[in-house]
Picture (cartoon, rainbow, N blue to C red):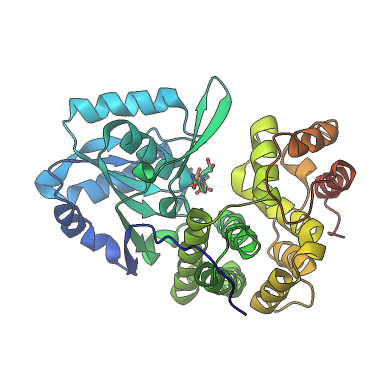
Length: 353
Ligand code: NAD
């Protein structure tokens, strides 16, 4: 039975397909841009310059200093570059780190963003910005940071290394998993979430076997888009809170942390969310959703233990304490001892229970 719900469609234009990078100039013109500053990480600078050369007089320059966690000092440097080259629009070409910088600039200046994601993180579909100042991360939700236009070019994901493809893909799945049991979930987001999980669970093993499999890359990016919409549309719960806490406290890598924690956070919530468990099981083709996600990561050679990505054993209690402070909504009440057990299992890499 369909109950009552609220659904808000976020205003964002999406251009999807192989070779769609070629539409960047037309999309900028559509936005009324005069001069666009390209943003990348240092690793993707050459790709950003190549894009710039296709834009003719619309190309204002490049800032290739995007980095994890959107530090405000980096944003200030990019702001100075933006002013020096008189840019009235930004193009974020890269993963969640680069998208974050574009959002931080839009928040401060109101410029339009053309976002061209090259990972599966999903930030381009959300009105959420996490910034770091003096090692403290704050998160805001403001529609002013939502990119106006997103170009998903499947070809740009062909270079994403298999390891990052797997963890970034499971990071995307985590958005959809928590959307399925969000307090403010709705039937449209539920459809997108199940379809997003299905597309990624099908695509990731095919990409691991053949990283240049265009059809599988297309499936994965399509899934990542759907999962990103889920993240942008409804509220997240224990899994995202745990990953945010663990990442911030122990400086752990974003996508790998999500990959390790997801089966455990889901197993914790399982008794409270039978319908979500059924949908996830169906989407990944496994008898049990939490064990199925653990097996997916294991078969794809992802790291399964927080201790292997730099978390100290002494951090388990601290993480459990932090997870139950600043109370937030979760389908199963937050029980400190059970959450400590969950983190301990994720730390040592055991299967979820
Ligand atoms: P990332 O953006 O840090 O990218 C990781 C590395 O991969 C970078 O060096 C990048 O240049 C490189 N890379 C990206 N695409 C590539 C490609 N196709 N080929 C080769 N190399 C490529 O990693 P991420 O996981 O995409 O993003 C993580 C960040 O995004 C975190 O800071 C996280 O907090 C943020 N995030 C924010 C939201 C939100 O809604 N605000 C959502 C998801 C993630």
